[in-house]
Amino acid sequence: MKDDADFDPNRIDTTETRAVVSKKIRKRRKGFTIVPGWWQERLIKARHIATYRTALHVLRRHWENGGVPFTLSNGAMVLEGVSRRQKWGALMELERTGLITIERRKRKSPRITVLRAE
Image (tube, rainbow, N blue to C red; front, side, top):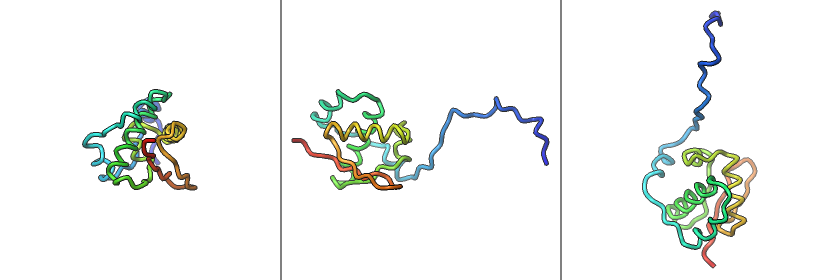
C-alpha cells in the first residue's frame, strides 16, 4: 500500500466540473440564434442570466427540430454554463412568462414545447 504522506489536499483542483457531452451536442454550439421580438419583450422580466442562456438554447433547438417538441438534457445546458438546478429554475421562469410549456417526466429530461406568438 502506498504511503499517504505525499497527499496534499490543497493540490486538489475543485474549480472545474465536467459533464459527459456528446459530439452532437458540441456541434450544436456552432451557428447563430434568431430571437423573436416578443421573446425579447418577455425576457426583460427575467431575473437570472440562466434564464437568458436557457431561452437562447431552447430557441435554437426549436429551430433545429423544425418546431417539434424536444428533450432538454443537463449535459447540453452545462455547455451553456447552466447547472441542473439553474436549468429547472430557468425553465419554470420561461413557462411562467408564456414562452414554453414543459412536459415533466419522472427521472427523464423534460420535453419542451415552444409556444407561438399570440
